[in-house]
Image (cartoon, rainbow, N blue to C red; front, side, top):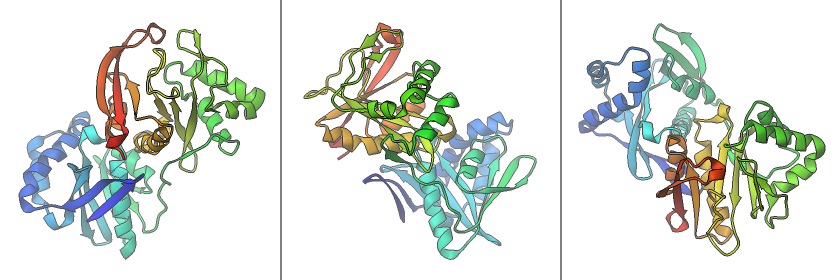
Length: 348
């Protein structure tokens, strides 16, 4: 049985499958593949069931267990030229949290121990093509309905994301992301990006310095409606996996978990579009939580839009629970929002 560690918590475990698990695995496969198959005009539940059961091999199949819950499964079989990654499925509501990447890391380690080449197929047009390409697989064949990939043993996979302090070393990557249209400000977007590019051009060192401001000595903060409010103590960390991946920020008030009405949460994060779907936001939030606790906070609150399912998954994966539904202040458009709370007892 394998396990994967993210921060100090075991998140993903691979556990054995029994023969009588077959029907549950079929249902999970159909749930995970339905959207891609429908998009390709190939969805047929009966055919999907028949194909899976005809090749079902319990000894080569393992449950993917995430925080104690079965959320997927993986099948790795012998192949005349190495190993075949025959199936890897994660339930849709658990996708985007880095679970698939954790499973691949374990499968890679096992393949590398025996020097085996790993093969995998992916439905054309499916997001899994991008997923496998990002994790070191090379496209070797394009068929009518599927693409086929190969990963030789020992291929270096992407470095797990870490948090770094803003500095001159990482600033070029931050600038490049701004120039591509990304911004850590999810509300003001391009306007905020343009302001930051101007500030960096004018004085890069001063820009970096104000991203870490535990004493709230910096200038007032501009809200989406153009009004300004006093700055809170806080800082920003950058996501790094060998290149710039995004930002995550923490803010607070001394001696209390309360925040002023214009501050929607203690933590905000934004991953660059070309690094999304790798579980980076989930890991970044998990890495930041101990730092928030070290500031004396007993819990943190994070807000998200009702339709932002990906962000809700990130928060819930780190122990967040829905605290309330609310209406955002006028400065943020008066739209509905969801406020989650992460109590540190739950993540200790």
